[in-house]
Image (spheres, rainbow, N blue to C red):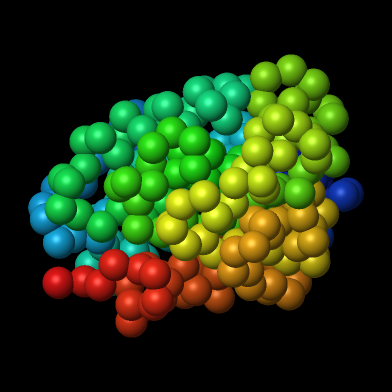
Length: 241
């Protein structure tokens, strides 16, 4: 029964998604039942704590492969699931409550996929997160606006339109605080192309041939994120002690 359902879903998705993206989307569906509540790791002063913020119509469970890789390399990982359709401001306040539970002596890194990357920067730039966060990283986040947001005209959809108040303010205040940001995007992403996935005046990396949901599971993207968090310290990022 379950296999038949998955096969039917895969057939429908394959009509408009490349094979790799179809598999990634189905992987998301399978993982979404996990980690629906707050997951807060044991940690202390001097630890690298990574908070993962998922995208629209997903859950924290979709982060499991990246979470496992980060933990294997020594990072502590916190996750939470936000309500589908909640605005950027509301999710950022939820993120703030999660960060408030992290030891003040830890280095906090926030990684967001799609909507999650917008939330991460709103928290840093508009909700006081700059005082706690070491760096932010976004995967396929529509800082330049997402055309697909027009399909969801209420709640979060309005926040992701190209000239919404949220995105306009984020771009205008991109350098308001000294918290570095890395945007990762791909020209192959049909939902959020690389040209709109870059935060204004911050560092960006373009990866080829990777779709929107595939960003979560691609080995090269995962290695890039892990290296940025746990590799040699870069200028503007607090050193590990």
